[in-house]
Figure 1 (tube, each protein chain N blue to C red):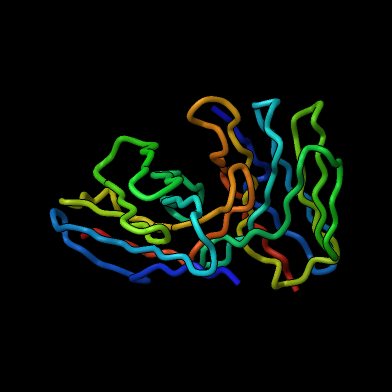
Figure 2 (figure 1 turned 180 degrees about the vertical axis):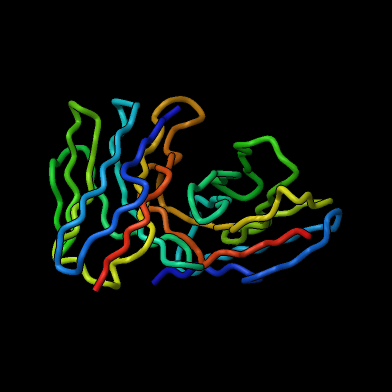
Amino acid sequence: GENVEQHPSTLSVQEGDSAVIKCTYSDSASNYFPWYKQELGKGPQLIIDIRSNVGEKKDQRIAVTLNKTAKHFSLHITETQPEDSAVYFCAAPGTGGTSYGKLTFGQGTILTVHP
Amino acid sequence: SQTIHQWPATLVQPVGSPLSLECTVEGTSNPNLYWYRQAAGRGLQLLFYSVGIGQISSEVPQNLSASRPQDRQFILSSKKLLLSDSGFYLCAWSVAAPGEQYFGPGTRLTVT
């Protein structure tokens, strides 16, 4: 099955700085990579995703980059704000047998943005 | 637009008691449905996956079971809860896999 590693586990930045979270995956056939934001006591919210036919996708202050050769993808948040503070998860799907289509999640990154 | 509901929001149950958590999705037909468990606010563990009524795939051997009696209804059950069943239970849906998965608000279960 798919194995997803996420780093760092915690990230602390000052308001206005940029934040970068990186994930690596093991299944070279994986073709869909979402990022989720989870606020305390709530369900994860899909914030951006990328498919393997593109290398970068942006949505206002957030962007995701994908390096298929190296099997890693990253979340970039620019001009961070205190409301960006949350736990962020990456995920990647399995592609073989009973793992097909099922997402494997990284362990999460606790992002804290200090005012 | 699509909406996913879970209830109850919080639950405190004694060890050995039964469990029933419910998830319903509105605004879509024949969704893929998922149950996840999250411990200590980190890491999502897939418990069950369903592609249609009565079709359940169990991902992890455990004290829990799932059922899908209707197209947009997914139920997580246990006959006898264990302390280790405590956690945050999340239901999710998707149109296709792999693809966008959307999560419900979750149920916080504490087994005492």
